[in-house]
Amino acid sequence: MDRPGQQHEPEHFGGGGIDFKVELDPEDLQPSVPLKKAGAVCAERTFDGDRCHYAALNLRLRRLLKAFEARPPPLPPLPAALRATFLACPANRAAFLEMLQWTAGSEAAALAAAAGFGPTDNPSSTSLFPPDITFYVDGKPIEAHRVILCARSSFFRRKFNTDWKDRKEVRFSSQKLSFGALYSLVHFFYSDRLEVDVDDMENLARACKVCKCEGLQKILIKEATLQRYAEHKSPRDLDSSQKRFILHGQSLPEEDRLPSALRHIFEECLANSREQECYNDESNEMSRDSGVDAAADLYIKVCDKVFHCHQVILASRSEYFKARLSRNMDFLEVKSGLQSTQSLPFLEEHDMSTEAFEKVLEYMYTDNLEHMDPNQAEELFDIASRYLLFPLKRVVADILLPYLEHVSPAELCHWLMLSDIYDVVKIREYCLDIIACNFEMFADTREFRALLLTLPPPSGDDSLRTTRPSEPGTAGNTDQGNLLDDLREKWLEAEAAELDERDESAKLFDNRLEMLMLVAEQEANDGNV
Image (cartoon, rainbow, N blue to C red; front, side):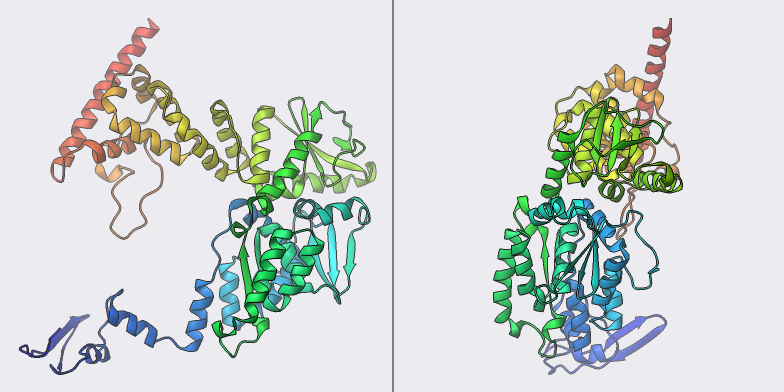
């Protein structure tokens, strides 16, 4: 761009078949203005680019950007699954959509899309596992599940064991509690994310006091006090009913979060589980007379041990259990005339140990594993694939990685094969990196040479390779492919020459693999003699 005192020449614009000139005034202190008027585009992250950005913002666009930037981060697997279950209840779904209507139609649609829950969805869809308690405030229903409420609040646990033990509906006075406050609290119990109107914050703080949620109550009281003196932070034309307070579970102490609350329920399940309980073979159900927690509504037998579980948690976490339990419920409805109302569904799982199933239950209830024997990892990978609990593989991999730092080359080859079979990317990449950086050491290992015979050969044509470098600006090629192709790429990254000599290095690696395979075949033949 021209500066004052310099020889001035017209600026040329070209592209798209258009070529024209723009005269610039050497004395102009803002020479970019005529360029922008002529259609020039400022580069991002420059001063003029920022000026263009902010100059284009009107009040409506500012509100949209503010709403977009205020979107909460994605929920972890456990809160996300339970939140989806909560919103699958028809009454909760209707209330959620009604809250979105407080904003403009287009903005409400954008927020619903961001939440993965749009107003165009079929409102007649219902939850496969309906709620077992319904609260009414001012005539409006809120549907919930006892196990979640008992886990999050000692008040609800006491009430469900005494006054509300056999009740399906509970009505509250609207003079003491607002619908929005109770809805936000129950939604928080499921999702570990609080979203409440500013007008309802003091009401919600009183509800937290009754429900013995001291940590949340302190935060709400402090925030409500701050909101009284924060009017200057928000647009003047917005009333307080359009302002919402959002709190993430990470802001609370560990003991007040959803995983910690459900861990207590999980520990009760293990304490109430026992060896080889009797059950009715004819109806394939167990009686409720064992005196266990009334919120448990499912028995699962593994080997000689019977676990007391909760259908809503297992079905929310696993598509396998959702399909199996929904089919079982349909079957029970058909033969309902033959069974007692005090019986519970009974399932039996095969081909797994009780210790591994306990770990799977621990993950489904808490999103975490506190301890794990590395010898259980292979069985857990298999169960995670069976139950469609793919995030469990990542949790097991995180625990297993420190153990792999001290294993022998032969054992590392074993884990490489398992990670490829069960699609555990983190373990697979770790093993490939170690082998690529220590290739000659592994080449001298009989187990590695034997492994080569069990794998598909590497693709000779570059166009067939599964790990070609991604084009700049793309997301990258993350799909797993041929294991030897991926090992070759790892080795080339670590050991190969640059640019034109890279192809020669690849040929040397392929020739080395062929030699190792010949040695492995000879060793296999010698072993069969």
